[in-house]
Image (tube, rainbow, N blue to C red; front, side, top):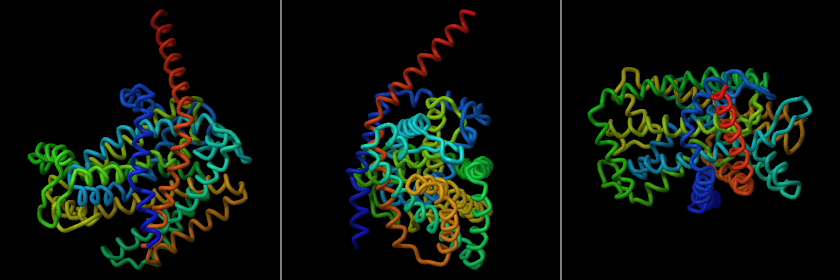
Length: 449
């Protein structure tokens, strides 16, 4: 099929090399600051519940809004798919992609805040389409238009119809809840949140994201504690498989080093979205007077999503032994939870529902801002109506083709964004250098006093 061929090209080696190469270039250009400043980033995050500067939402809620769209089925089904096809070594390459992806996410947010605008209603708006237009100049506006077009359309698939379909099918299978009921309830809840705009989306995300992450991490930690003796050998297997491949076991057909690398990088990027350009749209709305401060908070999105949540999933799959069984995707993770925890299936079902719901909220804002960039403020209300209708429609349709088309559009978002990141990297380096030089001078003056 044409869509399958397009996806194979879009998400092929060229895209993966472009994303990894951009992340590596930014990491080196920033002299590794995005790795050494992670403790500092957490300090800023915990102090960021109240903003300091222009914006619409707190720096903390900006990160929670961004995480609401990245912590989702990719952390559950995506990791299982990567390990099921690429072997345990895929988790190692997922870590590597995340380490350079931290710099990518940092740069995206720095540029988003630096080049953001104030719309006709007085709200701060930004993201790749704006830093392309304002940073690269009017001649590059077409590139921003492409990003906005792909972003507005992609949301209706991966973050709207597909998410609601997944939830409705889980509830139908587990609890015999009719899909019509699921569709009506989800549509209603999302509509209520959307009516309040970014402030309400951010408030809901600020409460739900920490809660759902805590439930999932505590449950995963309990499974790891029950299988603590297997953790050292699991870590050895992950590293060994990354460089030597995996032998066949059970229903597992074996994996090469290349397959582990491809699946680890691809699923890692799909999960944390570093380089796709979605998260900076949320960070542009943060109450801040410093692009570097918000960028430092933003980079925690990749750290939390991949190096924490995805790692927990991967270890659970490996120590419980289900990775080499017959299940695939979310069913593999469900098997691990069911086998190790009382009500494990119910806990994972709750996590899937919460993950999908927050993804629908986060991406609704991304799509709305992309549509506004293309057609102006008058498109906001029609977009929200279509978004809510799409959620209900997703529960009633078979979405195999929609998933594939949306996956392609999601990947196409990355091309304009990565071009802009490479061209505007000197701006990121300059802003970062000035911020840290000024911080060092201020610290020196305080010591003298």
